[in-house]
Length: 75
Image (cartoon, rainbow, N blue to C red; front, side):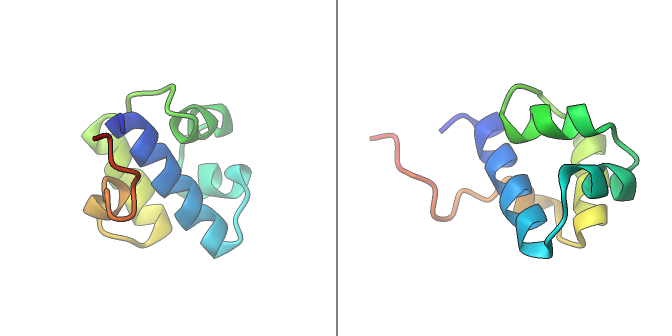
């Protein structure tokens, strides 16, 4: 799976686990809601700085956003 899509799925999963809307995550991270949407769709290629901001807002280690555990295999 493309890493951008994997990051997006992880952000979305963690955000939903917290019961947050994209707007709430945007507020907590200091990013724009449409940018959050683009990340979750795999359309954006966030920088490591953005990943850190998202991880801090979601209270997870940055590596959790790139975790491939449970991702469908591509083989």
